[in-house]
Image 1 (cartoon, rainbow over the protein chains, first blue to last red):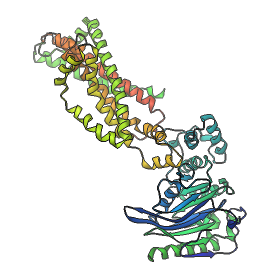
Image 2 (image 1 turned 60 degrees about the vertical axis):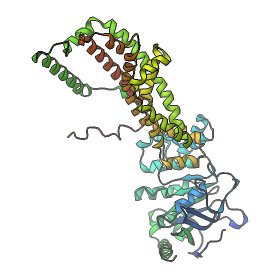
Image 3 (image 1 turned 90 degrees about the vertical axis):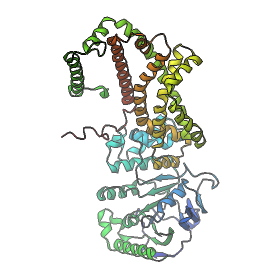
Image 4 (image 1 turned 45 degrees about the vertical axis):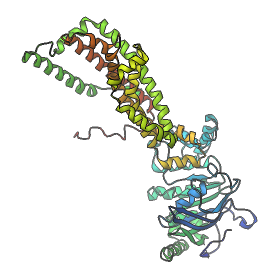
Length: 283
Length: 263
């Protein structure tokens, strides 16, 4: 596990995991995603400073922080859209000297569906760019569409779908190229609370947790606790990680809306909110 | 083929507006006793269309050929130039000033030179049409290609898109609405280009016919103008149909503002 600057290791109860996936011995294998000492400057302003984090196979890490603390910038650095000013980023199976573009699945807050393409045509975009033929890639979309609840709308246009459905198409598009690392940037941030809550539960079920390393960025503390095995807390100016909280909720088994009112959930949320407000005042 | 659907409500205002214009024109000519060589009434213009359809249609065919050739060349040149301008800043900085300068040339003054350089056959007229029409095509296409959402570009990059794939799968489809707006302008001004080319040096075409027709035969000159207008409207309609076909999958109608002031 990468060393985290600031104080770490706030443990709440026994580690039972929110998803029921058995814990994996993290020390025995290299992480799928390793970020070490990464900094980023934009027009000589430090946006990110000395970021260290690692995400293991089968692990779901949530990154919370206030708006403008550089969360999305960090995902842009990991995906290869931007190049870091300092430090390095390692993604399993990708040579650090070549571009990570095309090798890291990245789902943004906006669905960014191409309006002139059907659901199926949008979903297969990543495969199409790799030269996979239409028949084969459409078969792969159709295969996933069932569990994504999209089987009936494969021929529909994006504007005919609800916001929640569009986000599912965007996730399907990001996942189909089958990369080891998945980045989620406020994936449900633009949705209403009820749709968001339903999709959070669905997301945990649909991800093949055993195979992927997932890094979620959010400003919603509840979402971070619900989805993450660990929560990393960021502070702004410059963006940096100030704390790490392990999520071990006994109430995780209850699932559904009741979990967010369970005592250990509320206690964890209070703890993270305190960390966030501490980070906001101390430089 | 829902994009071909029409209803009486679409056509009635157009027909009434045109009919009113013609009636006012006709009544004014008779009412004020205007000599017909000064302003031919619509009845005389339509009489001319009725009396010598072969003459007008034959020359219209020549003009239309020049227009279609010129328009096709303009689209080709426009696509190449716009692609180059968007692709490379060096191309943009070297080519854009020349494109703009080309539009400041008074084509009427240049046309006689074109006749000398190229000859009086159809190509000199085609070149004038190109000079008139490539500019709206290039400008609209560059604007359209640049209107792409940078987040969409980044999304495609994270999926591993090459610059060429980003261009063909994102930028070109994004540019189509602007591209067709430019082609609608080009379709109409192409008619002016052909007439100016024929005016300066030709042996056929509606522009040539207007030039060689004695000035007092106003009805024939007006009839030629009517045929040119019909050509322009037909070209415009053809571009609109092409646009509706090309954009058939776009969520267009839902986003367009029409009838803003209607109750």
